[in-house]
Image (tube, rainbow, N blue to C red):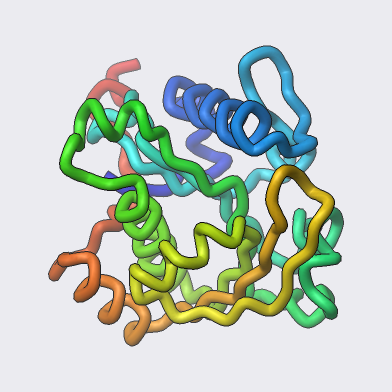
Length: 215
């Protein structure tokens, strides 16, 4: 399931969050070669101390992680304005209550191959984006800005996401980094569900699992 973990729920979801930080280290540090802060086998940065919302794809008990990303309001500090500003000519234009930033999007190809062998990594990224659009629409967010590699743009296009690439820059790792502005709307959700083959929402609002309630 796709759901969100907010700051108030961090403590009761330590297992899946730890898996998320380990996945981020493997993807962004080990594979992509980004200059990201690493602590042991996890990737953690300053923005994690600001109480972001984490969108996670996991099993119903929130113990096994398949994919994740981080959502933050652009009215506060963001990676886009502080680190990736070169990917967009005017980062200040993306600071408003209705605009949120999505960062650290990644999928665990090993766990997906084990539990969803027929699902390609590309479609998994598409589902993660669909869940993001559904989640943001449910919470009144109008636009999501995100940085991504050029190859991921093709995945988003094949998922029928509605977005504009507003810029890109080199110098952050092995590949250029792009910046996209994604439309959050019923139209966007309908297009993506049709392309990805879903008629019902994939995003589920957070609720404590029986295991967490018993802890």
